[in-house]
Length: 616
Image 1 (cartoon, one colour):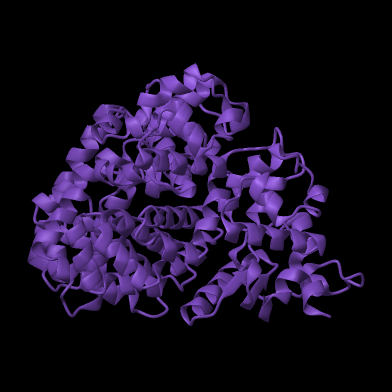
Image 2: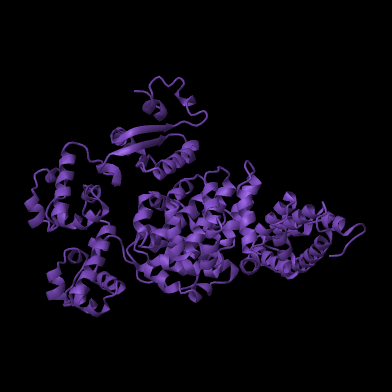
């Protein structure tokens, strides 16, 4: 880069960036190196110019020009990550990072904002560390100031973008940013409608969940973050939805706060996402994650693969599958062994969880690792070898041979009693038997019984709660394989024939059978089914989803119990059960967005849902 005729700032502002625009995935490596050298020199000259300009009116223009260079560098296909990092290093080494941090405290609002914009583009790992060491309070303050500028989308984007980066440094830094007001500023921005702002909010909350540690996760609970994640996870934008889902799954993986996370209802939005998206296609959908996450970020996600919550394992496996494709393209698949992810992925790939195992197996193939023996969710159809593999997986290799010698297949495994474990398998240690029984009950909850369960007895039991799935196989083996047979069963038979020793569970099942007889059981697993709701929130137009979800959050924050008719109430189920669901609520809110009533015009037969629910 060479200065031409005119003032230094004119030369900087008039420099063409066409060569940067022309770089692509097929560009020669030498072209990339030339671009690194040219624009590193350009940044160096620009910072020198800015240091001389000080409060000059051209300073914001020069900063904006540097910002353009950084944006274009990050956007280069394949090489953007490498090029962007090189220029960020050049900016720091030239003193540019210190300069723009100083500008964050200046009274000149245009200079302050131009500096914040550039800072948001430059917060790589090394630059984050520099900011934390030399001016974290200045940067957090300017980010919070940006979020408080009303009616300025650009300011909101920059402020939330800076916070998203800062939450990717360390647990201590996360604590400092929360203390300085960063989390409160983010949660206020969650009310906005701008997609890019909400993307930053979702990403920031995911980062805080991963990097913040237990103390900051508890701070998130105190500020009702799981509730605020609901409108983000409910959003129509896939990127917002994804990182909100990621945040909630990381939080639910912490057993200390699991109960509070479940109350928000946000976790229920995870499975629809992972079952309707493709990891490789999703990786290409947005520049924000097209280059993949850092080594530390992924290392923090590894423990979620071992979570007891199925939703958490599903999304973690989805993400590692996406990252495997990205890292393979970058030639950086060794990272997975360096962060200890291989063994966790192999364990998930072999587990009887259809979604998580599929994505974990795909990830292993992409990085060139052997895929282990896969266990089907159809547990009743397991072979002796399948049972042996499962017993080893759950940490009981010492008794695996006993299962083989006794020829225990899937059918027998689901019928094992504590006496069988003690006398036939040789698990004489009572604590070990409890551990084994706990794992067996988890298996029963996730098992697929369709090979035997033609009348959906499992679905009926789940209306009382997911934990009632542990009785499904006992029902089927007792001959209760049709719902008609349930009507004549007694509580004593539940004890003697089905082995249900828990008297409370027997009472709840009997109540469920009575509801079935009265036509009230509807097969939906909703905690709210057996208690009165304060508010039922309904929306029938796609553009009403965000307003509906925000209403849900605001009402819940004020102590009301709320149900929102999300995608689970669709097709026939929606038709049959909407009125029954509404009857359980004291209040009904119908969200009407602009033009929501237009379809009702001329709808004499009242086929439109808004028409049907808004008129008696």
